[in-house]
Length: 287
Length: 133
Ligand SMILES: Nc1ncnc2c1ncn2[C@@H]1O[C@H](COP(=O)(O)OP(=O)(O)O)[C@@H](O)[C@H]1O
Ligand SMILES: [Mg+2]
Image (tube, rainbow over all chains, first blue to last red; front, side, top):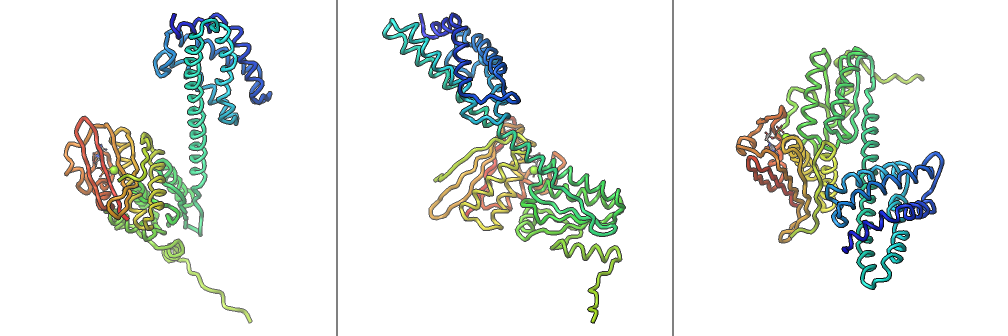
């Protein structure tokens, strides 16, 4: 009888024993908390996985877990790892789900095939390879989940950092900070246009001092915004184009030819004051 | 000789930002000045976006290379998308099929020291750029 068949039979024959011991091993290591992960959930996850796992190995494929037989099982493993990662489990703790099957399984293999000198070696090896692969799969799944969390938080932060501020009567400023990907740029520009209408402003300053890269997409978004604002009767000023950005834009061939630009936000505000007829003067010293 | 190499997936908008950030980090690492950093990062942004938007996604490979006694940052953008029928046309300022400014390819070429493009309709597109220190 071949190694794979032996293992498949073993999993079927000793389902109850393996499940019980596997769950026991997990409960000894995994941090349980009634609000996080309960004993019931551990049992549920484990039996669900065991069932899917048995179906997968029924196909006789214990080496290549990338095959179609394994799809459902891996999906389940992915979900289990994901939810535990989100609960704040460490990589070790999420991998424990798989690795805690090792001891019960190996003990059983020894007991079952121990009579034949050659057999347990092969079975142990096959089981080790398989569990290692599944363990590594949880590690990948853990990292992917963490990356998703980071990306979501980044996106949330991006949305937060788009304040349109009123500088003066009829004058708005939009200090842009950080990376302008296309989604964020669109959100920011729409917000500005809405604020122009809401505050009945006639000048809007877009300051890009804090923007590390201006590519043609960002430039196009800026130009579209300026045109839209113009149609609404407001003038836009773009300020804070740093020297290195200006040089890159020239090479790209982007010219803000009919757009008012100023070196600094202060210059832009001065220009806006002039446009709206605001005069600023230093108060004379009282003696 | 390639001193260091990394390959990043380019499938969605966020990936463009990540590739740009890695390009910036490597540019700083090999000692490119602020202006040159910005140039190569801007070109990176253009080509990475083309890979996502027109190439249907692909990869970006970032290599730190050494040739004789000069060091450089080489970036290669590859996709298995529709390819480009007429490369000269695509490299013309203002030419766009996607409602862009049509300055991404031509502008990138002006922003870097070496530029090469290889595209076959139905097979895909590979664009390489290098900025030497
Ligand atoms: N990776 C690619 N695959 C297929 N077509 C491309 C690719 N990159 C560029 N193109 C074509 O070349 C044109 C010019 O590209 P580009 O200069 O970046 O301008 P834009 O992105 O504004 O259209 C695109 O509109 C597209 O038709
Ligand atoms: Mg482009």
